[in-house]
Image (cartoon, rainbow, N blue to C red; front, side, top):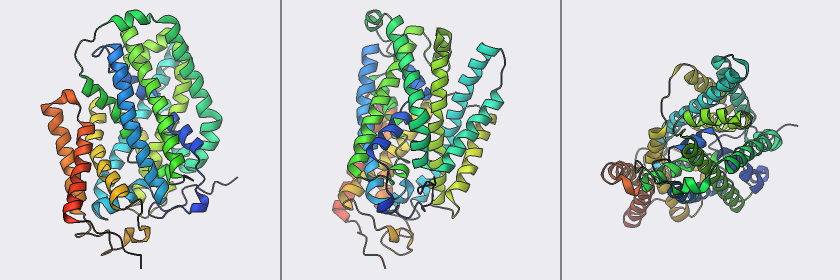
Length: 437
């Protein structure tokens, strides 16, 4: 059976309406799966013991609700237009201006892909050492890199319906259920809730850390919802799937870290494996491949808006780059990496949401996306209003992070960028696309 959605559409060309077969169930399955993983467990472990468990769980719910709402709203843009994420930025920043976040997106996706491969490799290698007494880090790196690249080449709909539904989600649910059951059976929850936080982490910073995880998917979600059969279905499926997953695994990470004293990178996974969770971790590792799939596939889709090469070819290139980075580049920490993503892309997509829903009334003139001197050419290919609002949001993020980190910077920066763009457009006006010639 041939998948008609197998990367056959140029990212700058809308997917034909008759072939948008991605359902709400598909969106739920994809984003539930992407919201669960080893990195989410480790990110949750960063919240305790700096915060008490009750405060950490509150930060997880608040941060997840904020991040998921923004993620689901952005998913509607892909369903409305049938365009890839980076293509949808051209009406906001201009045809040339959109190249800047496209390059940044490629860099951060490569970084995420390498991180995911490293985490999967390290856990798999630790399990093989414990079980068989052998180490094969290089082999695991090559296996996970090759598998993710192959999945990226077959395309999103085939991935969801052939891999995720049949194998990924069942394995993920079994692994997650075991970790949850083990936690409920072995942990003294009244004692954990009675512990006070050390105060090393503020509530606002914790919310920022939680928000950063769903916001890290903003630059690529439309690459999948462009195949959606309904904007409403994409919103509901994305919101429900990612919220449940993010709260579940952030909560597991925070609770396990506090109970075991294994807070932070690597320590939590080692503690879980020593506690008999090796089989559950192995199942989650297998499903974790979906995160690298998304990174590699969307990096290829983003690059295809700048270079005229097939997405399949670019997927192979980016898969090889992620694998090479995982082999040769040591990544010591990713907490600041998450916060940096929030500073760059949260503000940008605040501007984009205002532009799509308010300025352009959910319409993009797709044939004009490549027209020099067309409605999206603005001033030499750059939209000064969109760029100014974006930069103001980024500057606000870093100013708040330095001067008042306890309030959290991601959401205020997004609101500042969105409000600034709305004011600029209201005062100066924004050119609307004319009918394509």
